[in-house]
Image 1: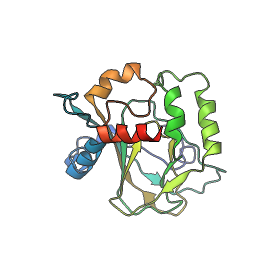
Image 2: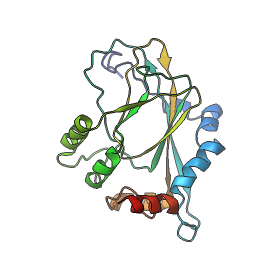
Image 3: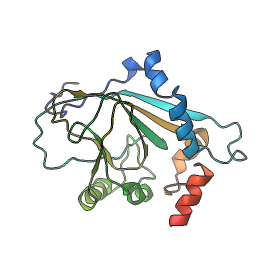
Length: 210
């Protein structure tokens, strides 16, 4: 917390202090529309997932204060903790260059096979170089939206908080989701983008495109 706002590029994170607020929970893992949408992606066949749990991980509020950015390009990263689907909920209107959540489309297909041992304390050899190659070979997309917009994204997608150069503050809430079947397998991942821990429709569509 000793880094300046310039060093942080205007990006802050409010985590533990916001988890006790009922209004925060109501907008994330107690949000029925959001939860049902996520479950449609990560609820495996009932015969497999009998008595398994649906596990939300509330991250917090991530404001981005406006800064005069001098970056030539936005730098992406891959989440090091395990989950399946991440969600971003915009709390105000977000325009291009206004701190929009930014992704490198399709990057999860490249990164997933190399991220089986990725964690907070371990980064596979050459992983940073792989992410840098992805950054340079895929054009990033800023996902804009009105207040209340929800973005769902794959946990191995290269992503970043965009720069806010428009004035004011961009507010968003982040929450991650996984099911307990995937959690049990997380220490021995197969390197597959989608497997049997996802919903049958998702897995079938993935296999169709292989």
